[in-house]
Length: 274
Length: 212
Image (cartoon, rainbow over all chains, first blue to last red; front, side, top):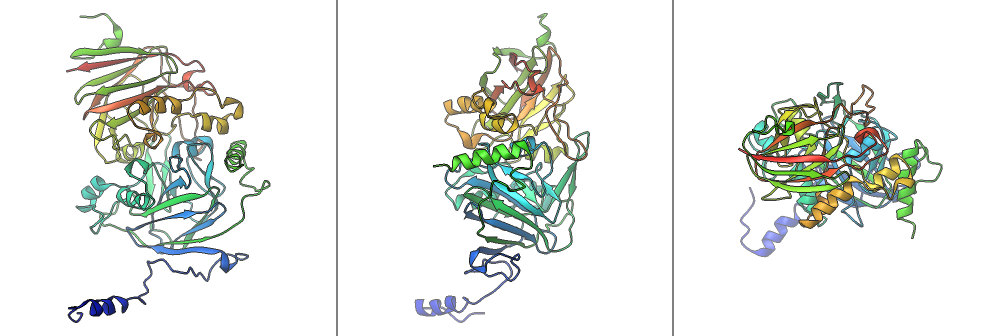
C-alpha cells in the first residue's frame, strides 16, 4: 500500500522508486547476454528481450542480424509477421514460402520469402522442429469461444490483435497484418489434408536461429496456438536475442542449397545493388 | 425452364452471367444470400479467388482461419470461408469437384523468377490481376493475402513435399458459393503456363450469380 501521493514531487519519488525493478519478461537496456554463441562479440549484441506470455514485440533489424528465439519453458508460441523495413508493402508471403521451396514444413536451411521474390530471413538452426505455416493466429472470436474473452486488455489476448499492435508501433495498420508463420508450435498434414496440431508442451530451452537477409521489421506475438486443445490459456515467456552479423556470402550453404534459393538470393542482392 | 446444363441446380433468378476471358481479372459484388457459381468451362482452369467484406474491406478471406477452423487444408462442399476476424464470408454449398486448394497461393512475376527462372519475369501472373482489380477500388498490395485456387490440386506428402500437380476437374464442372454477408469477390483467371495448374492452357471461365 503506498503512502498518499498528494503532490507531484511525491508522485515523482514514488515513480522513480520503481526504476530498479527486474522481472523475467522485459527488455534489457543496454542488452546483455551470457550465452552468446562462440565467436560472437558481445559488442555486437543489439537486442535482448523476453516477451511475456500473451505478449508481443516488434523491432527493426538490419540486414545480417541474427535473431535467436528461445522457448524458455517449453510453451511459447512465436507467430511472426515480417516486413521489408524500407517498403513494408513487401512482406512475408506464406504461400510463396511453401510453394517455392516445395515443402510444407520449416526447418534449418529454409527461407522466409517475401511477396516480391526475395528472402526476408533464413533459418540457420532449428532446435525445435515443431512449426506451423498453415493455421495462423487466434483472433478475438476464437479466444472468446475458448476462454470466454480475448481482449488485448484482458487475461487472454489473441494473436491477431497482438500482431496489429506490434505493426501499429511501426506505423502499419490492420491491412498490413498478413498470414503468419508460427515457431515452436507445429502442425502436421495428412494425405487427406487433415491438420494435426503439435502443441507439446515441450522441453524447456528449444532455440531457433534466424538470419535477416534484408532490413526487416519483425512483429512477434506470443499467444496460444489457435488449435491448442487445452481448455485453459497456456503461454510462456519467449526470449529474443539478436546480434549483428556479416551479410550472406556467395558460398553460403543456405544460399546455394537449391536453384530456387539461389534465385531468391540473387533477387535480394539485386534489390540492394545501388 | 432452361436447357443450359451450366444452370442446372441453381435456384432463383439469374442476375448475372458472364464469361471471364482466359488470363483476365474479375471483380464482382455478391450480396448476402446470393449464390455465385463458377463454371470450369474447358476443365482444369485454376481460378484464384479473394473475398473482401463489402462493409470493411480490411476484413478479408483468411486461408489460415479457414483451414484451422475446419481442421483440413482442402475445401470441399460445406466448407465455410472465414475472414481474418473469424466471420463467415461465403459457404461452398456445392462442388462437382472433390476438393479445391488453399495453400498454393497466387503466381506472381516475382515468384515465377524463383520457381522457373528469370526468363519468366515478363509473363502475365495472378498477382498483377489481383492488383489491377483491387486498385480500381482503392485496395493495393497490402490487401493481397493467401487466396483460394478453385479447380487446382496441391497435395502434401508425408515428408511435407508439396506442389501443383495435374488437376482433378473436367470440362463443365462447377462450384457454388453462397455469400454469408455482402462481399466483394476478386478473381484472377490464372494465366500460368509453367506448371499444370491450367493444363498448360489458360481458358475462360463462366461466372453466374443467382438470387433466391
